[in-house]
Length: 366
Ligand code: NAD
Ligand code: GLY
Image (cartoon, rainbow, N blue to C red; front, side, top):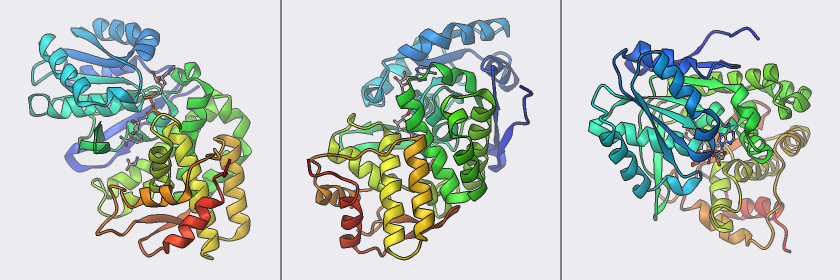
């Protein structure tokens, strides 16, 4: 498959490119080399991804003349912790990474968030690149510079806006990803269609089977269009003062579900798919979204991602949880609501009783 031009995230002196390809993972070594031919490199990864792709990235870095070492994290959300962060700093120091050193985050959103935060704080900030290997990381977390760890007070509560120097997304790496993770990541893809691009929603509907099978052409198209949309939004609002809030479509409710169900019950993308389904219902009940559009979006979510029906979770607890959202301002919860396929608006005046009714439509009492 021919490689297409990289997507530029336009942020002045912090601008960078996202290369989406098929079999291009090792070009991360040339990117590092262009950034600094002398750099020592820490490849941060987790046990699953390290085993699959770590050695070939190290070999490519070695061939490009770099001293490089692998820093292995445990797989899973627990690695976004203060403890794991301290271990990353120690590993960087132990391998002699200096201020000209480069961190390469090879893995999913957990590795990207933790390694990016570690890079942003080690020696007051060293350069890093993202080499995302999950659907979620390729279409969302590797682009835009949000890096964070979790603390007891909440998820992603300690973090930075710290942009990478480049992103290399190789869709072939997605073929080893468990199907549950693929479907969860596709929730963010459907999100881009709903918030920004009705034509893209149509493409997702028409090519659902090829996308779920991760056929290289379909996978590359989906990752590419998602990154283009995210790049445009982030390029206009890097630090989420306004427009970037639309990327939270389904997230306020999704985070509240993750919390109410207990972290780990649902994957992030599964909870977001559920949150989007509730937001669509709410938009429709508010008379903002035509019934046919609501049906169409919900159908696509079911097909590509699956919408969980949480059982035994009190709708009130979920609504209560939305008030603790980091993005709530002065006690008012921001809801991103759909006005049509490809068009959303942010509202902070939504009656909680209506939210509860929409939530109740998507939980089972059992
Ligand atoms: P993850 O990083 O935990 O990866 C999921 C699982 O897949 C892990 O077990 C991992 O080892 C494995 N894996 C990764 N790539 C693989 C591959 N190619 N083949 C086989 N196995 C592979 O999960 P995720 O969904 O990528 O990321 C979730 C995290 O991303 C959350 O912590 C969330 O808060 C964060 N996030 C951040 C942003 C942001 O803007 N920074 C946006 C969305 C989500
Ligand atoms: N994942 C939402 C954002 O990057 O703003």
